[in-house]
Image (tube, rainbow, N blue to C red; front, side):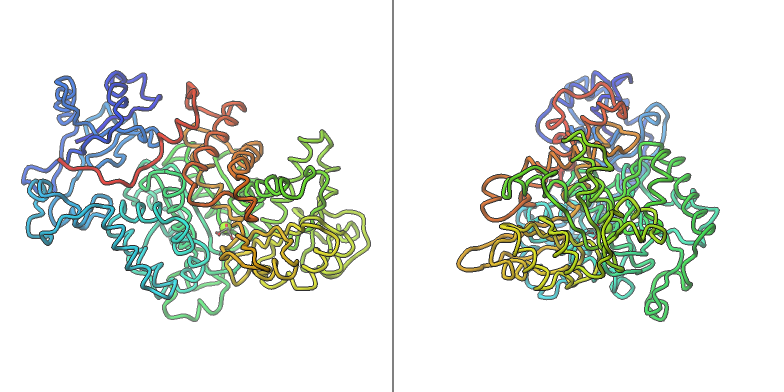
Length: 640
Ligand SMILES: O=C([O-])CC(=O)C(=O)O
Ligand SMILES: [Mg+2]
């Protein structure tokens, strides 16, 4: 049965009274599973369904599947509780296909496996297709966790999780949300990196949308092939810089898929509103081109106009197909494209670059928290980066912006507290002419310095940040130098995955004699040093983008603004507690991520309203509560 949306922008429709009355329900009402005339998969005339639905509502029987999270969807939900149409479509008759029996079991959005009740088995032609046992979702979670723990190879765990996602989506998300600290490293960094490297070999059913040069001129049609229409977030990569692993071409698809799983599990965005996209313009990775299992175009990367035209067609098609409020998250593009794409589409589309902006926001939050441990204000610290690409310059710029807001000093001044080292050494003004544009603001007056250790000794930073994508670069000498002039050196080894981390947690604590405040992009286990257990924080944009995106969605934001990044950082920093600090953590644990995301979303949405960039009016009174209510729940619905 269709269901009505309870959010504010339906309030002008004829259904507002109904949606309000239904939305007051606190419990999850049952889903009505509609069947075609043959009792199997079939088609329904929705206007007829709506008539009877409304009658049942008037009669006091709530058969509509409505819950507060429909607010995120902005549309009507279909018979299975997923979005089926936008507001405009409510008034026009249309048809929907539904599944039952064998096809229901094979539909990952609605499959519940052994959790189908006796009644559901009767009503939906499932008798005999399942063994007699009926189990709860919690028991399914318990069993699956036990199974996953038996795998010793992380990639096997990853594959088991992907299989589950393809088989039973709600159970996948329940498992991930209930065991987020244990499973995040499986579906996300670092395992997702290995998965991308081997994607061609491990691929079963393809996930996401592949748009290659072959689709040039037809991208709008390709978007229409995707089964979901009401898309709210797209994560797109061209695979050229996958984590710190380099060019993985079309196999970068693992990244948008993983990021969007987090949008749902950590940020509560409906799975059906998420679209992973990989743009395949070839790869310069010869190993992949020679690999018989490689899944992408077998050609060198298209560049220049050919590249720009394909991306432009994609961006135009996205706006045409999904409207201007769809969020496009750029992920793992190479530096030379990432900055240009953000600048080019930042004024016409709702775009967010996770590597530049998401990473900046999470690091700034960590630094604000770390001040609780080291004292002083941001402006009283000195920052040195190894790596002057997307992450490095993005973080540097956001720190400078925050310092400038705090001290009223111009950006040009606050930038002077921040130094960057790239592959050619310290970025200094004498190198200005040969620097890429995004490095130029960081070229300060200083004599040239060729390597990191010497730069550390000369600049004497209080904060050392690794964002170069090159592992093992924070050597013993570097960390010892940091510890020689800082009581508590702040050391962030941000490069991913673990193999590319600038140093390990153990190295940071050992070489600094337990004094470092350490966080890393990839997760590290707690370390015992001199009888004390240190828990390293994970400075990964996964803390930010799910809540950030949710904030944009619930406010109907049409553009991303730097102040929203600062708002997200502040919200995240506020969630870290003294208890976390006592263990050396500058971030709250991921186990609280749904609450954290709601606070980030609320702060981002509030900023969107303040800046006049929000279109969803009126502004909800309590944005945290509103964000929480909007979040997707992975709990099974009952089918009638
Ligand atoms: O994916 C991650 O873990 C963080 C990130 O964006 C990157 O390293 O590119
Ligand atoms: Mg990334």
